[in-house]
Amino acid sequence: MESKKEKWPWHASIHKGRKNNTSYFCGGSIIDKETVLTAAHCFYNNATESFTAIHDDKIVVRSGSKYVDGITKGVQVSNVEEIIIHPEYNRTSLANDIAILKLSPPINITNRVQPVPIWSADSDQNRIVGTSGTVIGFGFNVYGDLSDKLQEANLTVLDTESCIEYDPKTYGNHLTRDMFCARGRNNVSACHGDSGGGMFFNIDGTWHLRGIVSFSSSRNNTEDDVCDSTKPTVFTDVSKYREWVLRYTNIAKWLKELEPCTNGMINKDTMCNSASRIDHGFLIARTKNNIIRIPINGDSPFSIFEDSNKTVLGGFDYDCVESRFYWTELGTRTIFSAKYDGTDKKPFITKDLEEPTHLAVDWISRHLYWVDLEKQVIEVANLDNPALRATVNTLVVQDGLMAVDPLKGKLFWINESVGIEWSNLDGSEAEVLLDSSVLRISDMRVSLATGELCYVDQGTFKIECIDTRTKQVRTIVTNITNPSNLAITDANFYWTDFEK
Image (cartoon, rainbow, N blue to C red; front, side, top):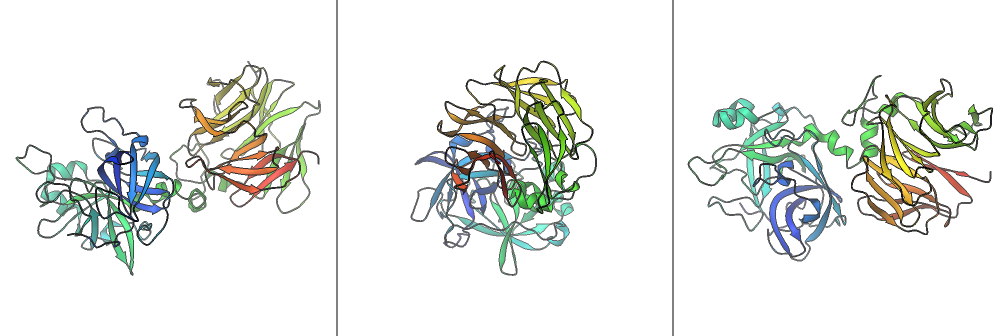
């Protein structure tokens, strides 16, 4: 039935195209002012066997609209800056059919546009079997036409066995424990056009997102692949993906809620916090020719490594998985590592280095990146096998500064004639992030808490951060004297005074 105005302020409609020349193709649910949750299958072209993904620069999201076409008062339109498909999404089986859209500009929260909380209670599906929720969308009506006004339907959750009985071939071959089935009375169900939209349950007066419309059985003896409303709709169970979603919406909270990692290798999809298994409460900093450990509680700092030959030390970064830090020695043309207490010093790279300066550790995919100023390149080596080594990027103009975002898989560096540039970790898709050649950046780091790239500008005596999605810059602190190096924790920014 037709939904009432402003009843579902978190529903979003997803359109192909730009400006006024768009066409609707999927629904979604607003979970914060920058994020929409939807189905992964929406972004693949069914007309080709390759299922080419729809590019984010051809997609807009409308929020606050009761109508599938046209923009009325109060409707907001956002561009899609990034599409994040679940890494284990399977186009054939539709397993892990979930995707995240990052929006720019962010949505303004109003009476007509609001986020919906994700189901955070027990994820046991047996507890929702037999209960009813509401699905909303612009899906096909009984005549096979797209609805021009937002519709809603009450559906009851079925147990897996009952669902399969409706169509053993369709449901039996696709259902997983991360999906659930639901159907309504009088042949009411979700249909084409509802894909990506949410199924919501009211808990103590508050609606919660639990399902994402994924697929249903098709009608028999029809030329078009039209859904059969007499059979259940299958939903992706959002509660099974809460940690994955949190990783891209609130990184600080995600990290704090993760259990500490046990010893051994982690990878990009490992759901544990490697940093929480080691001692906190201190910073490690590099001076001209020694490395010091600085207790955050105010106790006196102390040296944990000092080069007796007074060799000038260059770049510095740490590996929170193995509790080691890495640095370059310009005089010996070597990259070394040592434990956090300064013991077990080891050469990491000794060959084919000309002028190694700044470096950065990707502790997730286990790689070390460094700038060689003499060769004018960024190089990378495997942390566990440094013989596996490659050139990532050839620099045109730079001063050696670089940073890595292990969570988003991005590499940042300075181009003095342009500003800050970035690319994927393999050097592909390089582009300008911040177009400002007047910046005098002395250090830059990625804040894992916010996902921003933060930097020290010695020209303006500021520390600023840029949101890599919206490209908006915010000032953290001003009027600081002689700023040089930078360190960031979840709660604080730390910097050094190069004259002290």
